[in-house]
Amino acid sequence: MIILYGHPESGHTCKVALTLELAGLPFEYRREYVFKPLPRLCCWLQEIRALPRWRGPQDLLAKPS
Image 1 (tube, rainbow, N blue to C red):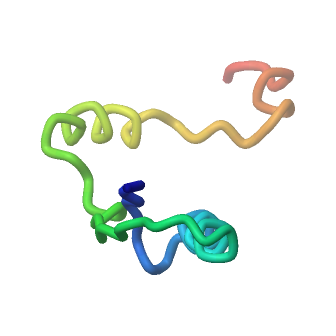
Image 2 (cartoon, one colour):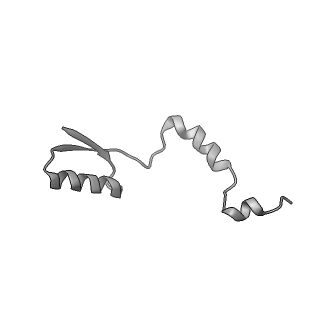
Image 3 (cartoon, rainbow, N blue to C red):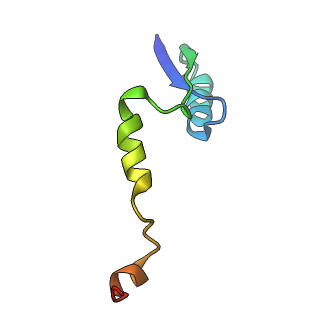
C-alpha cells in the first residue's frame, strides 16, 4: 500500500491523492505539519533569515556605499 504524507493546505498532496484515487490505487494518507520548522534546522533557518534580502539583479549592479 502507498503511504501519502501531506498537509491539507498543500495543493501538491491533493493532486497526488486525486490521481491515486482516480487510478483506483489503495493509499493511506498521513497528515504532517509541514509549516512547523524542524528542530535540527532551526539554527540554520535563523542564519538564513538574518542575511540581507536579495532583491534582484539591481543588487549586483549597485555600488557599495
